[in-house]
Length: 558
Ligand code: GLC
Ligand code: CA
Image 1 (cartoon, rainbow, N blue to C red):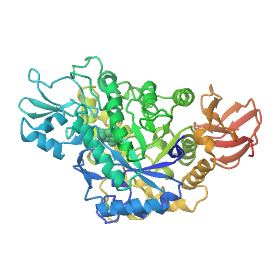
Image 2: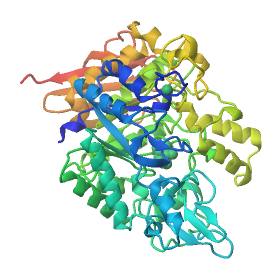
Image 3: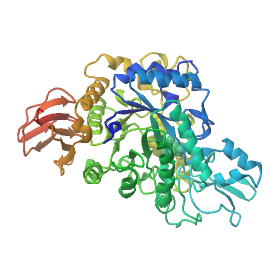
């Protein structure tokens, strides 16, 4: 097993992390300033969401120049400082590698526009319209058409925002270009990459019309999701880079299936070290996608458990490595999404953390979750997220939702929920900045902030510190076998983690009710709990709302 597997990764979405030059926008200076704080969370890597030059239509994921730093985030010099300061603390920096598309202001795209014979045209998918319409009926993953008109009868493929043009990976120059970008950053000292939507880099040959009945996300599987060539292209690029560098890699697997996952992240011969799957994130979305509201609020802990079971149980016998997460910059805050962001905010934040960090695999966490930050209700004029703004319209036109319901759906799901500034203190602007931030600050910062939790032994923050240090001390949590117990229980998730050295039992009540259960083998001594010490184990147990306990069943000293 690679040593990288036993790591904890902290994701930073820089725009909202910490502002140090007082323009209301988070920056590299802020990341440097907080390195000591981050180290208290026992992290090994920071995954930085994109910091390259960008027009910010999709906040950094529309890249104009992969070889420079977005001026509002800082300079290359500061970036080098970040790398070396992080290294001093044994923290590696993981860059976000957005390789499915560039922005339409990127040099390649601008050169492609210069003339019809430009060699750069084949870097993208430029196509003539068909009968006055788009070249095919594919749809954008942000809603609307998957094509953007660039002249009277010509379109370019844009599977995300109109300012994000899909790269044509068939073209060896594109693959070469991506290889060079990766080498450039590795030479600067980065530890690896998170590959943005890497499973959709190959598009169905001939770009045929999709089946019109396959709406929303449903269409992805047959036309863009993990097509055979996606593996070949990626293999070529990583093989080339690995000739010179060793690096950490995690791929974003939009709508990743288990079969595809097994081809990406084989332990013994990984294409990428690990992948993010979307099944938990989309648990309350219909088949049409994130904004398919028909299942909204309707998911159960049983549904949740069956997804976890499927990935944990099946995959451990199949040479597969997992990346585990509950939150990121694209999803609502998990305390609001899966937990209880009101009465049991503290308890549920701890319970869900205990769950995420005790699964087999590498745990990822997202800025602010360590203090239990919650979704923020934003009014329409406060929305920044292009996905939310586009889908608000799509919900009303295509899905025929009345505006006030469409608004509610967006408020629940918008990525802006995860993008409000990190709440450092109860001072003006939450200690994020001394001026009004670029996006609304969650008004609950006076109550929920790092400063107030730092010295409170029972805070969420201090629980994260204990939990992450516990994970580091118990490799069984990373690598050991995962065996579920109490699998039929509707509110409890419980499992045994075991290796040759020890056997731990994790029991977590994921509900806001007290629950009872009986244990077949009621031994065990608690070593980490979400709350006060619980009652001793016996055959009839009662757990408080969101109570979680890790106990030791066996230890072989050797
Ligand atoms: C990924 C990113 C998301 C971005 C999209 C397009 O899903 O995580 O933030 O909008 O790709 O690059
Ligand atoms: Ca700033």
